[in-house]
Every structure is written in C-alpha cells, then in structure tokens.
Amino acid sequence: MVQPPQNGVRRELTEVGVERFTARDYRVGPIIHVVLFRYRPDVSQAEKDEILSRFLALAETERAGEPYIESIVGGPPMGGESAEAGFEYGFIVTFASAGDRNYYVGDPVISDTRFVDPVHADFKRFVGPFLSPGGVLVFDVTGTS
Image (cartoon, rainbow, N blue to C red; front, side, top):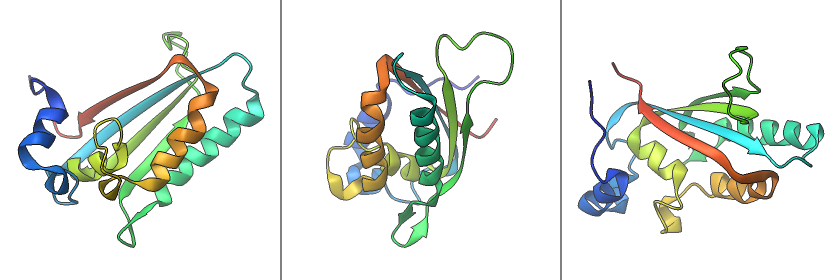
C-alpha cells in the first residue's frame, strides 16, 4: 500500500520551487482530482445547472495554447448507496501530471498568479457563494495502482 507523503504538497513546493512544481512534465502520470459540492439550501436547480455547465467547460481551458485537462466528468449522485453525506454534485478531473494538477489548483497552495490557471481561479470565485460552509471536498489520488 502506498503511503501519502508527510507534509504533502506544500513541502514539495518548497523543495522544488513553483516553476518546476507547476511544469507540465513534473511527475508525469495520471492524477485523479475528485471534487464534491454541497450547496446552500437556497441554491436553485437552475443555478446548480449553471455551476455544472461551467465546471465541465473547464475541460477546454488552455495552458500555453493547448488544453491541459485530460477529462472532466460530473453530476449528481446516481449510485443509490445514500452515502453522499449531503454532497449534491461530484466531479472527477483527470490530469496527465502532478504539474498540471498543481497549476490547476493554484490558491491556497500557490499564490504566484503566473503559475495558476486564471480560468479555474475565476470559477472558484464564482462557485464559492453557492456553497454551504464546509461545502467542498477535494481528494486527489494517482491513477496508478
């Protein structure tokens, strides 16, 4: 079983520097980025649909003139396990490298805007007011076994 790194990505960022940490060829291999949203009770279905549409559109975001997100899928839960813990929509974003994922995540890990996806940063500002307190869960895993 693979153990997660101690002190995580922040230590790694300090060790390699922000330019390398966000490079397209940094730690090449699939990264699966899971995002779950829990909305405020007053968020309408139309607003949820708009959030879904905008999130899925991030797949077309370019970096240096080329798309850098491998894929995005998302929507409401469909499994029937009733184990959603109040989260209403989930997304799976796949990247070809940790560097691409790091560029996408940006703040709060990376504060230098030269190394942050501005389109994703704008989306985070857009969606924030629709989320309940504690209304986002993010979990990353490698796509390797």
